[in-house]
Length: 211
View 1 (spheres, rainbow, N blue to C red):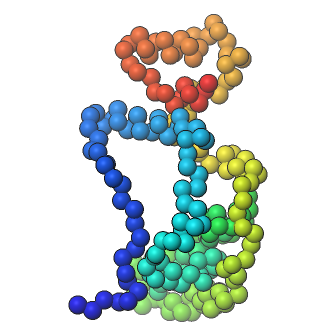
View 2 (view 1 turned 60 degrees about the horizontal axis):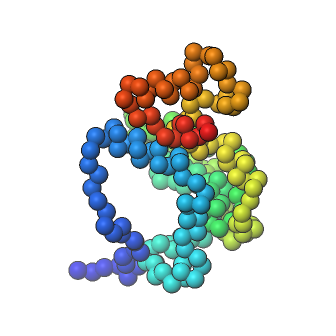
View 3 (view 1 turned 90 degrees about the vertical axis):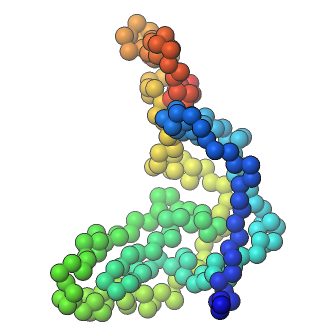
């Protein structure tokens, strides 16, 4: 059979010695999600590959197809469907500094309501989407290699932690332990003791995040 020369196998790493998970699905899920939240920064491999290792990986040409468009903020058009490509939200994936917060650009909610139900001959999409076609035709104006290279950035970390959910399990309470009333019926220590007296193993992450 004929094969495209650029459709070679892609590089992939397969896990070794992967064991099936057995036991109660609910308990396994709780244990799995708790493990995420109790990780420390010293247990994370922040840069699993250095530039030398990356340069030695041979990827299929398919992986580099249209790379000049990877960082272009432009509408992508397929007949009546228009979706904006907004790489400025994920600049770190391209090795560049991530502005925080990212520039706010409208994704045009009006476009999301367009479909072809009962409209097979109603619209000439070339006319209706003329504005977005013009933006696509002018995409060559973007600079895919522009912008400063990524480096560790405390400002980004502070913004990220306040703008996203960084924990799977919320802590038991947000009240500092020294300020928690010791005689309150809802005291965290009493709640912990109640759970353990009933023979239930409390989840680690909520208590870990609280402490």
